[in-house]
Length: 277
Image (cartoon, rainbow, N blue to C red; front, side, top):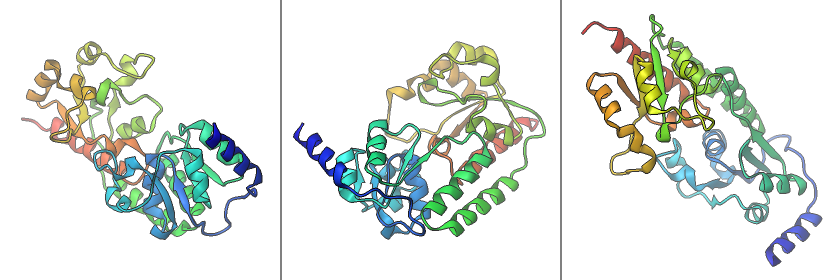
């Protein structure tokens, strides 16, 4: 209670701020997707705080860049103490903390969840501009476009079903769905439906008879209960028939230039599947 009271008093007397006109100092990111864009687009000296997820190479694509930077837990008081010039948060970042930071007048950039490649491009450019490095955003988008353009989409509309840990799949209208379609494939999840949590029952996955199922490329030595279903005998049988493709979940998790690799891997899997034995 004393800490919360002290924080309230601090917020009362903090001056209100607005987005920096050029290059904000002391940038704090509050979720993994914000971490990845900030660490790719900002100067290292600008970064005042990142989440612990950024340091974990199992989930982060920028673990090497995150090494040695201050880690935050997302608490209001620790972020206020950093006196950030910009806070980058996600749509699902702790709402209480985000609301309190806004009330204090700290500039907060909230990132949504892009539903397609145009949304990814726009988000990259938005973050780059907010960091004062618009040219880096343009370069990242150009790299993304070049990598996507280099992919030859599948000539046959093969049916693919993505099953992440805990059997979560890629919903129609999501970025993952757009990546599947960019590879020239059909998202089976649009046909069979999902439960209210976005999960696909294994029975439904088997009966749908997709051309191939996309699973996580698991890390050796890191067993997880979330991955248990992915080792079910039904999926093991599909593996034996070369109908399983492995793609690291970290490539799907956040919008960024790495999504081009997802498109490339899906298209390559379709090419191999379409080739006569």
